[in-house]
Length: 156
Image 1 (cartoon, rainbow, N blue to C red):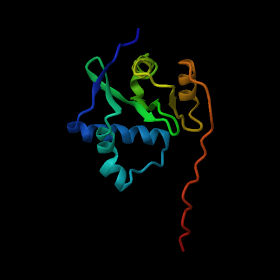
Image 2: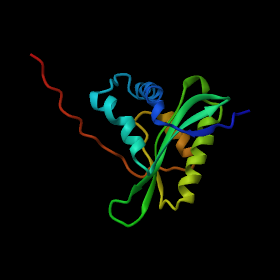
Image 3: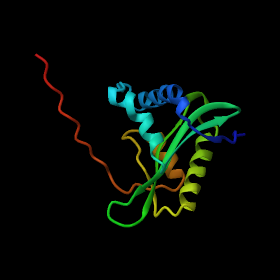
Image 4: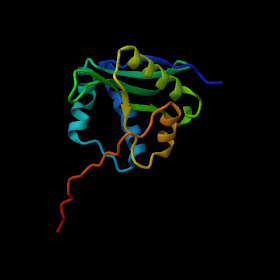
């Protein structure tokens, strides 16, 4: 039986706890992740500053077991809004319990009620578990995003 989670707004006073959990999340995506100075200084504040972003704690059985970040973006070329799910993280010991699915369904429902023209998200290359999860909710691959990383400087 899965726990029905609550989505509780992340507040400014939650900065330290949120950044610790976000760092854990990003390290799971990339074991070499090291928060840069600008990430430490502004990631959290920039999220909270955006009125069109919703950052929520995922609370199950009275404990924070993850977070979800979703919201709206202006369409690049048309006068409409696109829904976006930016991050969904559940601590490892709470996974496979239905919590992520319940949170994703809530976010999708909220975005649809607010007339998002579509809802999009990105899945990191190689994260097959996440890709399968989102496909099970009806998402389809629509594009492939390529990134040109800064060149590494040769050390002498």
